[in-house]
Length: 500
Image 1 (tube, rainbow, N blue to C red):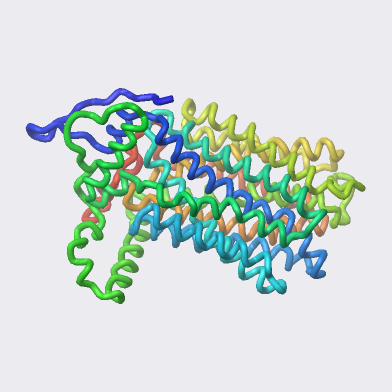
Image 2: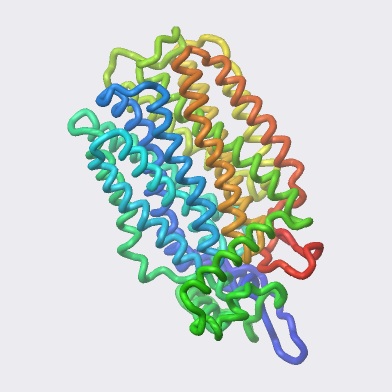
């Protein structure tokens, strides 16, 4: 249902004018955003499946190829290493060539490498191909930037959290798929079938619109206006009276300023221009106004990803029956115990998203993330002592629920804090910092669990979550209910506006 918001009419001299934010507030959240959400949601569904494969392929490959625990961990680390590179790379592509090109390239790489990995002849080729899959998965933040720029400021946190439902259902579906495929066929079939949703993204790509906010920021006002007209038509509403203008006329990307000369540039000169543009965008993250936010977000995402995937891997390891540890293990005589426990753990994401959606637009981004981190720590703390299998699963369920809530809000918060001109780059860099946590986590968490140092693993998670909860409270701005900003004044970093 369309939900228009109140808008105000402004004038620029004698003419009525409005910005993209005011246009989106006028047309509201309706059918158009619903279609955009479904497409981006399909991407998150597909990407979640590719990430969750790690819980099942690792133990299976270890058994078939007689791998060591460190080799099993390296398989997960390679994926996160690829995601680290991909997050930053696709963010730069998105900021300088458009959101559509950013997630197209990421999806093509995910599909191709994902399918090829099912035919890996040996361990080395599997690691390389899954690293390439990870590089494609790094483009997930581009989908977030894209859909964020279609959503009105009113209740934006709750709307953006709808994406997390797709991620949660993707993890649940992957657990069910593994449960059906692995005992009957093999891990190769699971890899092949799991990449099909990503291929579906390519089928509908030609119908995907570019972000009007991105187009406006690039100076392509007419293109942005045409898309906004389509949004108003599908939502059965109207644009504000007057002329569409950029949110700010300063700091427009050099691409728009030099577009008329671009055809005269050689391929080498274009590549050099793209490199310099990307490097300048990255440096903007360390301007005097952004550096504090950037560094705090990097730590936040590092701690968040480490703890989130740590709990996933912890559940998988405790369920696999390969560890020699004591009575707090979740293993049983049931050969399906791994799938059952991972499936139950994945269900925890649903109440986690519901919790975050309930409070994010009421208490704000910062308090929501801090509160859910503290809640996760409370659930994990009893596991430093030996517990029954039922209690262990219950505490892991609560911890997974809470870290998912924190992670869902943190990914939205990152997108909102950066201006449009560096949004995908900033979010990509922050996600890359998070993927460092994802790379280290399998080596540390799996290593500690397999050596029966579960207490030490729990304490490590507790410390990282506590640090992250403190760091998020020091971020200067809470973006609750605030409009997005578009540009940075490159001539004077002191005039950079973040989320205001």
